[in-house]
Length: 466
Ligand code: SAM
Ligand code: SF4
Image 1 (cartoon, rainbow, N blue to C red):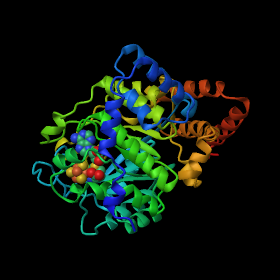
Image 2 (image 1 turned 180 degrees about the horizontal axis):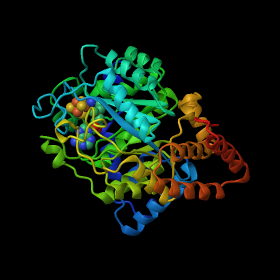
Image 3 (image 1 turned 45 degrees about the horizontal axis):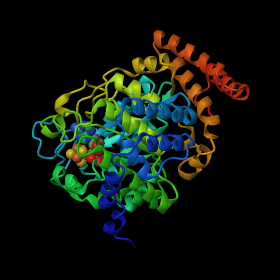
Image 4 (image 1 turned 90 degrees about the horizontal axis):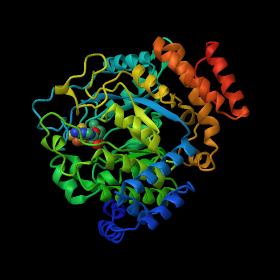
């Protein structure tokens, strides 16, 4: 059996520095060659990604954004999938200097939800119209231990309200053992998500100063254990602001290539959180390597070009404007109406109980209206996961472009479900216009399938998909 240190050696810092130095002053011709390759929708190699990170010239940057828009449109069309985080607990035994939940932060109000409270939060999210939840917790559980997470997943799935339920529970909790991952898989989770925060070992040691999370190798090998345990949808991410984003993107590429090589499949999603202010966390308010809004858009565009079939998730850490701009550049999933304090949906947003502060405070209905008015189709689809189209099976459909046959129509049927059951009158009218436009732009065959599904939803059936 491979040791964690052996597995973790795929992050090769010297190689990254060498590639960055080599690609440091690449001319426009090299960048344009890389963009031309990206248009073929086959992704990019690490040195090509490095060349893109060097671009600052506005004209070239414009060409890069234009290429990212093309790739996004070819693969994802105009769909944007929605979800909400559900924080079950802010107990934590770690000392991440950027996070309000860290163990020694005495000013944060600690709270682990009871199963009744988890069910209550779930009902509120269902009543808003959500179908996907991301369960989140700090790294310390009440007396039940890891069972607390499993019980909470079961509670969310078991909770029904009026005409809705949560159909996919994704999970973002601390790294687990292979056996615990097996239990998580048996609990029918969707994606297991975990961010490395920073791939740079020295920075990692500086900002994680206590608890299990100090162990870089244990964290970076988590996806290997998850995949060994049969979880084939995993989500990775970087906490931008801790270290040089150019290094981080290349290390992320090494992580992806490692998973592809070892398991035949890369991550299902990539998250791009930027540091946000958090209670008593100086480093969060003053990031050592701040990422400007222009660079942030560049990061999204580069990831879209580098791994075109991997979803990109944009959370409510970002402002409505940044979120809107990045839909076009490559974002495929967004959270909406989020709270980062356990119990935050039943109660109000409370900074002294929250993990960090948010940039987008709009409720789901307003976000949906905005997304639809911009010509994007809000999607609550969970079909792939429930039909077992995950991991390699999903990619086999996605790469030849076949997944669109399913996604486009399922997006519309779940959106119409939302419009019938939960939307305000203004959102319903913006949404109906959006649905009509989307149907008009479809091939006759796809339009027929979509209209059949929409007809079923309007006739009162729910959860209709192909
Ligand atoms: N406690 C587990 C862990 O750290 O992996 C589970 C999830 S943690 C509650 C969720 C994520 O929030 C972390 O991985 C980190 O990237 C992010 N986070 C923490 N503090 C943040 C801050 N101040 N601004 C933005 N994101 C932050
Ligand atoms: Fe705990 Fe996660 Fe916050 Fe670190 S980021 S202090 S592990 S909740």
